[in-house]
Image (cartoon, rainbow, N blue to C red):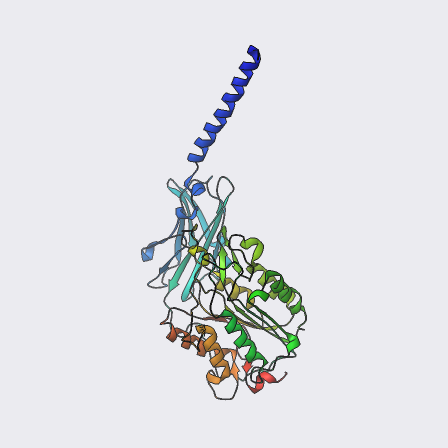
Length: 430
């Protein structure tokens, strides 16, 4: 039998435990909305001159580009919004940002005229905002601003009128195509023709018209071969072989997505990617950046990417309901186009890349017209060669027409516009 002091102590302990439980419940129910929700619901962008208001992770088609200022607002006090950073079209934009505190929230005015480099271009532009709340938890949102563009926007200036350049040195290629995924299902739907697209592109590279790439200089990863480990090996080990004067061609076909647990992170999904563990099982886009900037020594690198087939996969998962923008093509273009290089993506920011049997019995629309162009349809000046500039001009026009303008390929070609990808010049060494 317990004495009076022991009973009293036991009672005090029980009261303390119940007090902790009650306080914990009160704390949970009094968390700010940004703690119990995704956080970005409290973020918006305004362009007063155009009477435009959009919520985070949404887009707006703008009537003109005759404006230079916009405002991003976040509900909360100065203590609720910490360490805020902004990007415009992937470039850090804090330098043109002016924070202002008001009674109904934190506001950040952006003036595009303050520094060169932040003028928005015709087509789709991205604004990204990242901050920490008072609990040091990160929050992120993006906005798409779509300006009017002409049909020739992004096309090379003089396709077919520039003397084609032959390939330099030896030729190397990495070809990746994934249609079937180990964890394929509702959260990661399999594709129909990405592997077939990659195989057809590989066959072209090995053909005389494609330059006759030797087998030993090609790394091909289809479906179950395209594991994260094998993709790492291709990028980090195989691509150390090409020398400075060699030519590298990279072809990627598969899913590209943002992490549903942290949509700041963008990934190319490998065969063994687990949709619930992208951070540990998918190829982070910054790893591609590392390969392009630090590992590949060749100055001439041509990249083709058909990596946005499902318009933001995470939005299709049952436990994720918020709308999201998929910026993977914009970041891929940024990473792959430095120097004497070119990158052509199948679609623009947050657009779906279509595939169907109507294109060659089963292809992605981008790869179908890519192959048609390389076989000679893109030879605008009829000299027998197809250059990077000619190829994009052809593919862009055909894909726009075939999809009713809903899929818009994009190119950043640096100094590689005149590189011959097909024809007699593609077989020669410079």
